[in-house]
Amino acid sequence: MPSATLDCPECGRPLVNSRFDATFRLADRSERLCFGVPAGLCGTCHQLYIDPELIELLGLDAGRCVFAIESDVVLQARAGSGTE
Image (cartoon, rainbow, N blue to C red):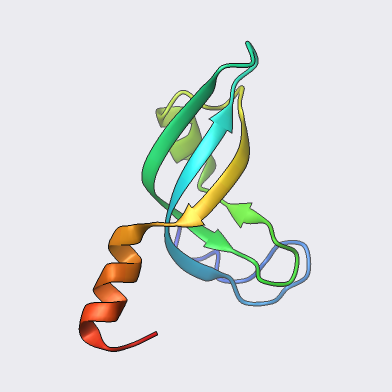
């Protein structure tokens, strides 16, 4: 996710930048899991923003993100440092 994109393009509120484990549904209806994807989440709009260049690099430009959750690695790191 480019550092220049810090606000939601839809509502203008700040994005929560983190790493997410995500499921993408492809045009052929198959699904692909991706782990640790850097992205920004809008808590108001509930939209996940992923860099379009990364989507293309992963070969997911014909797919759609149907599920995402913050990566366990991020959550474990926060728990270990005592910041949540």
